[in-house]
Amino acid sequence: MGDRAKHPVRTTEKSLEVIATLNRLEKARVTTLADELAMGKSAVHNHLSTLEEHGYVIKDEDTKTYRLSLKFLDIGGQIRSEIDVYKVAEPKVEELATESGELVHLVVEEDGMGVYLSRSKGERAVDLDTYVGCKHHMHSTAFGKAILAHLPRERVDEIIDQHGLPEVTPRTITSRDELEEELERTRDRGFAVDDEERLEGLRCIAAPIRFDSDIIGAISISGPTARIDDTWENNEFVDQLCRAANVIELNKYKV
Image 1 (tube, rainbow, N blue to C red):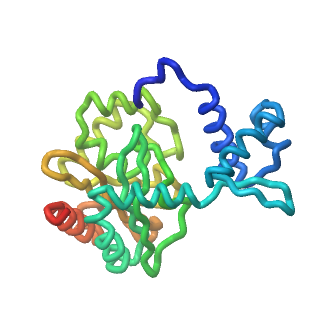
Image 2 (cartoon, rainbow, N blue to C red):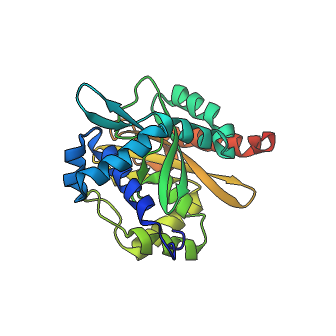
């Protein structure tokens, strides 16, 4: 995480709190937001009016409710389109989903969390709680462990200090020593696994993506335990996944 602002602008902080709360509630009236934020209605209205004027909030005149606008999607889409790994990997994400028939993700690390840049569903893919832009902890996911395994030890320690190792399922790794052992196994075999560590009944395999010596993301295949068995080295998806990661790394020279 970056350094905290020495002189934070309280008005900006309040506007961000309004945005975050409106995002959580999906839509709300001024009174509801005022209650949620412990703010006066007039102050909330001023923030909403300013955000609406600049196109970040939409007001429904019939219900008198506010929601976030698609301007956030526009900004996010522009940011994503400028990320080198996305430019190179997006075609392989779709290709791998078709080849495997499962759910494929492209993920990068930001502020110690895994952020989904791309998502593609094969014909048999399960429908998970993932979407472009959502974030998950690194230690409980295959993509996260694929990235952590190739980060400097100091950076891994920083991420753990910042986000901890919360238990997501009974199989989640929650100790530093166990995680380090798992990251060493990941480096040795060249791919990472999630054996029902984020969602019970789901397994995931992920391969790191490196540009030169830098780890810049991971690509993963997720599916039910009935289709992804835990004889990892002989798993049919490992070769598909590692080939895709290799092609992405070679195609970096095109960006």
